Image: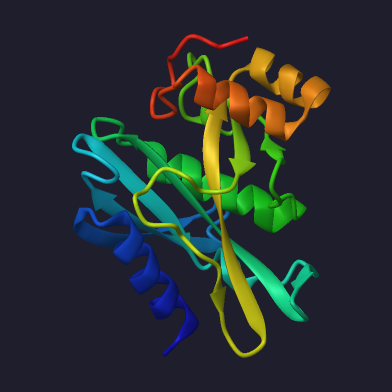
Length: 189
């Protein structure tokens, strides 16, 4: 099975949402593209789960288990939020350009490109944890594809991450039961 089809199938299986759909997004110069998968009512009603399809085609030189390690991004937002696919595609293009797609990385000011008044302008990259099923890495002959969840964070949360580390931020987000789907939420620190 072609890698992107397998990735799509596995992600849809984990999302368990309604109406899976894939749309293509282009960068500002119409040179690079990324496909974005969406599933409605995932992980719960009123939330849409999204995943990139195609970021894993790029080799950044990372390895895992003697295979080329590749990544795809996943994230969620409220169903009324129509601009999240553009945010996720902008994050993918940033990673394509910078190679910054590793756990703990922050893509600065990605959300504020589309939502200038947001309280959470940055995307924190972390391991997925929102769905009932675990999204496991997918192994192919010569590559391994893993997933990073994008979590919107504020300026103060970004500073906290830089001072205390990613584990501390993840713990605080979980402890405060932050609604990461809300781009206008109050910062937790």
